[in-house]
Image (cartoon, rainbow, N blue to C red):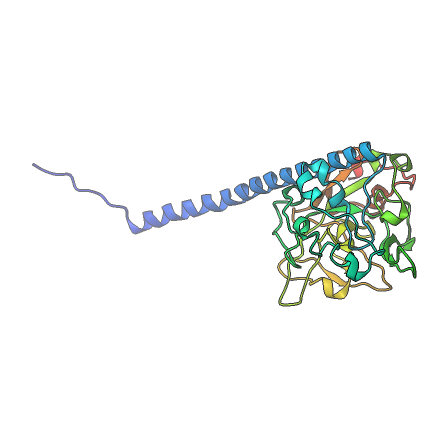
Length: 324
């Protein structure tokens, strides 16, 4: 019996096949990565919609928006809306009594967000506060950082230190870099509740929340508290910087570590004026929640005046939705 001679692949043919496969992988990989990012961004949009619904339900119950902060260390907006995020069990573990009226021995320290009475809450993971495009961080005592910050207006924030109660609290800077403060939907509990009636610009023209990044810690003692929203400075963004601005955030000098593992730029605050840009890990922009519950993808290229106008509650600006 005569057998046909088997023909094997030549080396050149094998190399051609390998090259074709490599080209196909190179073509498909960006598409796969883009699809994954689109899914992550969609989850991020859903998270903001949940936050918006929780804020609305809070307002329906209390006839006001939730406080942005309770002084500096005794709670922020992310605590007050927990019952409306289906996180009532976590909220019930929060001790609300902390403030400057307590001596350190009597509980002022233990009732802080870092105190023994409240770390059950601040170390618990609330997944709806995390964007899947970012890397998880817990920089201090296992307390979680997150990816959504509340709008504190169009200027900057500072601290006001009184000699009597309530002592140190968070306040907006009235003028900053040529901009005049024109109201914000969130503020310190000292300033009183913000009602919907005071949002005269209209809910569909007012930012409530936007994304922030979770700062990644460097070597020992090099903290980055971007996204540390249980703390007063980490809980907010200010619109004097545009989304994902190349200009630096201004923070306590020891509480940011720029240009490390994707950390945004930052410098130590000057004149006690603190500024934090809304930022995200999404290419080209970030997701932002408006007061009517809608979520929009805001491009990094948005005009600063449009971004400023969106951040105010009573600036009386005319905003064209196509501009963002």
